[in-house]
Image (tube, rainbow, N blue to C red):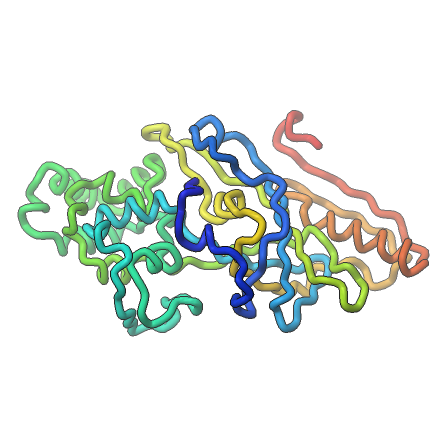
Length: 325
């Protein structure tokens, strides 16, 4: 899921026309370079991403709040799906988007769009196809495709039941962008584009805890920081690399690019209102990014507001000794 050659949203620069739910990348201190080898892409990577949210009408947040980021699919996944659907030569041909379920149409997508934009911004190509979705595609195939070697193999897997398919799916690291390579009977335009979109889920935003506080001064630029660990692993079946959709998207971002992002308050997760309260912070395996914002808030209270603050203790959990900070 790397592709810095993507000529879609990943390359869109700030031209001042972005909407109210857009952020502009100010800093990414861990941007992926041009080395897309498996060794490089599978190496552990932590992304510290800073976004300017000036275009938001009410860009305010508190420690503990989330930043919802809606990623786009990588160009490699878009092209793999387009080839499988027989649309590669039509990726930039205008289409009229019609849906019986308006919730499946991403808000920034105009009524007239292209297959490239739909595959980049709407269909979650990194999601795992369900047993029932793949079975539905299989039963809509032409007879010749169902009776070929790949069709017979897929039929046997479907006949084995949902459990067998799920086990295969996990072992193979199956995703919607890879389903055509796994089952050739589905490729070559045998699957209708409309049917494909009906069975895939729309890209949902991913929620990340803010790892910075707002500056605290009236009129200061609303810049939000999130800290993200890139998800990367090898599929059990063939050891091919697999990458998380949004974490890899964040790693590809460059300063000036536009990101669909929105502040989401989390009222139940806040530093104590009383500044003299002692605070115990526990990061037992899900990361300590939000506590970075908590520390900054406690420091801001002490240094900028001249308030006496309580003690803070951070307890960090890790799977191995090598993972200890």
